[in-house]
Length: 419
Image (tube, rainbow, N blue to C red; front, side, top):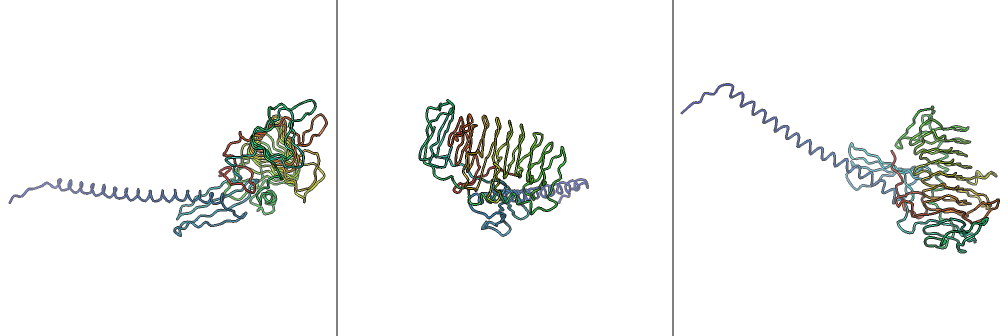
């Protein structure tokens, strides 16, 4: 038998190698375990995110009561939950979807309105009041038009004839009464206006010049309120904020407004203002020249029976203004006069929808849809009923993805993802 005598250093080397191998094996096992755990966690986060989309999609296809939170049955493990809440935000609905799986919680909030149909998009819907529609000068109507049974004809005002080669550049159908808004649409404006009565003290904002105020739509609404006139200048208001005055709001071009709501009897947007907001008034909204309001903005007058006055209410969009969104004039009275309630002046542009259940004077351009009870043309000191003088309506220029007013039979769509 032979004996090999090893030095002590060789044994130490062997032990060192064994320890290194053990450490490497342990590290590998930990890496595999961590990777597996990371994959499981990633899968849970992805599933949580997908469930928030399920919540928004549920709101698009089902009715949810205002200010109500419902829990959607996922038919899955108890540690998974999905809740959806619906509130009003101007002419739109604000829907919040909250998904939770174990310790993972994700939220999504969206503005929801009426989606455009893929076919038969309406360019014009003129209520049938037993009067024909008369077109004068360079008026253009492109797309599907619902007109009175008396039809459409060319006319003359102050020696100006109709220049077009045909009357409607698209299909014509017989109109009846104006399409109805979705059941709750008329309640939205009153609900938004009355929010101030439920406001807590910590929700009020005391604005200062040159400051920026932001508020997430996941948090309670913030308010800027005054019983007197509010003049907004040299500040920024962004997000879940309502500005409300009991008399009048004036917006200066030095003011940045994004996704907020303005509420007052009278609202004046001065020349050159740029922003993205909703303005809700009971008397007048005046939009200055060269104003640019991004999508989805809204100009709304809601004149209910409870606030009837002898003063004329109107929305005026002045020359070279561009509005991307909706213009709405609602008057519940039965009066029928020759005054203009909505006026779109020359070179003014609306990209979206215009709904007026009284009289509209259209001298500008609408890339989208017009719904009105009557047209008025005021020229050379005379008033012409159901005449369009040099106005343009073309629905083909409106993006198919546009989401706006929610009518009774409209499909819902996401107008904007909020923050």
